[in-house]
Amino acid sequence: MVAAGYTVYAINPLQVARYRERHGTSGAKSDPGDAHVLAELVRLDRAHHRPVAGDSALAEHVKVLTRAHQSLIWSRQRQTNALRSMLREFYPGALAAFGDELAGRDALAILAIAPAPEAGRRLSQSKIAASLRRAGRQRNLEPTAERIQTALRAPQLEAHPGVVGAYAAAVRSLVTVITALVIQTAVLQGEVEAGFGQHPDAEIYLSQPGLGPILGARVLAEFGDDPHRYADPKARKNYSGMASITRASGTKRLVLARYTRNRRLADALYRQAFTALGVSPGARAYYDRQRDRGASHHQALRALANRLVSILHGCLRHHARYDEATAWHTNTGAAIAAA
Image (cartoon, rainbow, N blue to C red; front, side):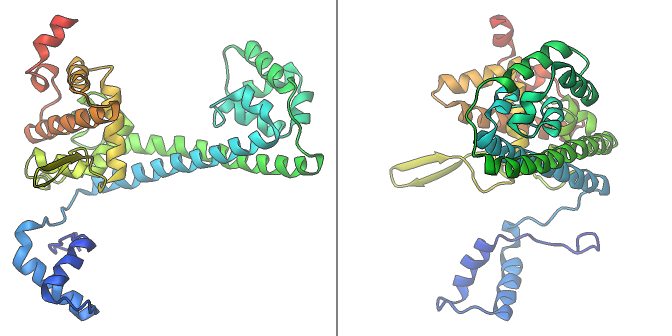
């Protein structure tokens, strides 16, 4: 509808339910009645609602790719968790051999040829090394093969012989699925980077501390590129979900995290804030000040992410790349002196 030239307002269903109560308290509900409520809401209160912005075709292109890429990552993690749970039941030696890298190339290569404990114990060091080489490992082949063989041959609790075959078949299936997900995730990552690199604002996003091609593409996709969508930094920060909310009644006042938000965007900004701690002295100083005030690690990161959103808004508004001295002008001198 936006592409066709219509002005569209996105109204939260909870707001519609509350507005319906202005027209009647009986609890009655019908489709014609809801249509009337929506029409009255936009006619009388449109100043309090924001029209849906129209992003460019390239931004929509990047959005489709980044969401598909992130969904594949989540699917890979779910399948990896299922594999870990299954190995814990009958094949603890594999967990000892690969630890948290069950979706890595080494684990997938070995589990594909040895999905059960007995098969793992029969593997020779040379066969393990050959499998690792085919999977792409080029360094530390022999030490890695020796470590894996030692872990697979170590004594471990055995499952009932009648179910080992079933577990092995399930492991083979999961390994096949995870391998395909790993390959397709890498393919989509290349598509994301290529699409993001074509956007005119890509350089501004990449100049921000903590943002690389993937996180930068996610932030661009979820914020959109309509220059009129956010009236000021506060509007962008509220949409990001990093800005806190205040609930005050009488003498009671609570400042809480904002839970109604774009989860994909919040995840990307949280990761950006964590990464920025190691690359931006200003971001590190800001985080440390939050911790000195008694904020927890997560609270300080949310506050830092909120500040980084404001900086991004200024850069986009002025079409300027990130500058450390300009972004943290109030504490640059202190940070340099401390260093």
